[in-house]
Image (cartoon, rainbow, N blue to C red):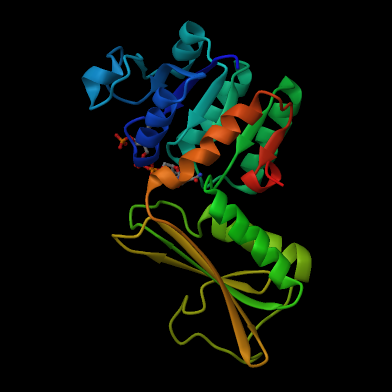
Length: 265
Ligand code: NAP
């Protein structure tokens, strides 16, 4: 297999650290540089507790020009992630974006840019294969159970709510069952937000607590029965098999793929 040259943005972050480890440990992956907003010009091994001697760049354009990567893995923040993804496409570098919080307008703009450039891009709000199956199983269940609420639970440092996975699950369920208001028609919130966010009648509840990583329960209700479909990521390593799959598959894509569910059967 040909070696894939990779740049990681956000290498000191919780996800970024795991991604650096993944690239270091994968024979046909090579870490040619990292993008951070500190430690310009230093070796990654000097700036933090890493093995890699990849150079840290604070300027993405300089990084791409000097390292000529095949793939950018972005694990930063929504605003920065969007800028990085656009720059990558401009420079002909395929972006694998795990950063969450992109709006529909952002996705549309990036889709158009990808088409213009004719290279692949992947935006995957959840890299955990189990979470993808949880979404697919939920979509199957929605054919038979049209009343459903989503509880998404994350660590308390997460910036966006609801999570990309929570929203995506609601979209996938609503594609099957359509819009439907649930609960009592005269229901009133006596405390604002008590019923959570509402996507086409599906209530999405975002829980943020220290100690959590990324968890979601999709709770269906029918006559005399409930069905719970739950996935738990207990650590960030749970996401790395998905990152590896995306980096490998992106080399054969020439469109933007949104969601890992579109890459697995
Ligand atoms: P995190 O620990 O806060 O890491 C983000 C990193 O980005 C930090 O090291 C931060 O540095 C760095 N950063 C900020 N501005 C930057 C810039 N201009 N250039 C380069 N790096 C910059 O967050 P995380 O938990 O790793 O999550 C990162 C992203 O991945 C979030 O959007 C999160 O929602 C998403 N996520 C996705 C998945 C998935 O499966 N797709 C799973 C978990 C998380 P400082 O700390 O110095 O600011």
